[in-house]
Amino acid sequence: NAGVTQTPKFRVLKTGQSMTLLCAQDMNHEYMYWYRQDPGMGLRLIHYSVGEGTTAKGEVPDGYNVSRLKKQNFLLGLESAAPSQTSVYFCASRSDRGPDQPQHFGDGTRLSIL
Amino acid sequence: GDSVTQMEGPVTLSEEAFLTINCTYTATGYPSLFWYVQYPGEGLQLLLKATKADDKGSNKGFEATYRKETTSFHLEKGSVQVSDSAVYFCALSYSSASKIIFGSGTRLSIRP
Image (cartoon, rainbow over all chains, first blue to last red):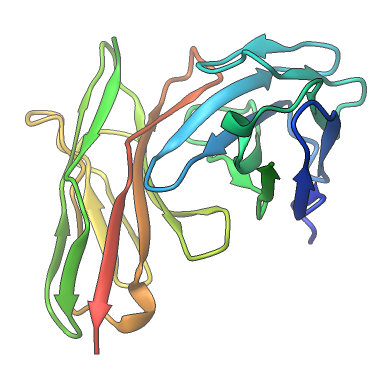
């Protein structure tokens, strides 16, 4: 049972570089999410998707773009990385079968921007 | 708006001590309530949940009861172990919304 898989696990970028973080889930979930978690802080929602082909902004969407071309994949892009985007990024997925359905999280991508 | 408030950490206890982590929520309807745990270097995992008033969720010796009258969902464990050291998040969700609202997290450290 793979669950939610994030790639890469670690990455170091220089300011201004671009990259894409990949999230894949094998549970046929409709909902997918991208969060960032900074040291000593909780989760902040960046973007989310309620189904294939849909995306929506969360609390902190600036500087990020997302795409959900396939139901099982949710991509997070940084077009021009900034040091303020140094963080741990978590992807999650969730069934749409009811409010009692929990989110399932990946193990995170640790991203450093120099 | 809807929100979740957790006690601030860090919480430091000795092994075998009794644990309570407070969680209260503000909601306009009848949400489902969750506790998640995050071990060092990992993502969040569901610890337990409750879907209606007076329900008790339990797992791995942890318990929490959905208290509608006090809008609370406090996490308890009778005897903590070093392996319980982690960050704990309280959260709520509605049937009408796709998002889950998380509290800010409480870091728990257990001394041997």
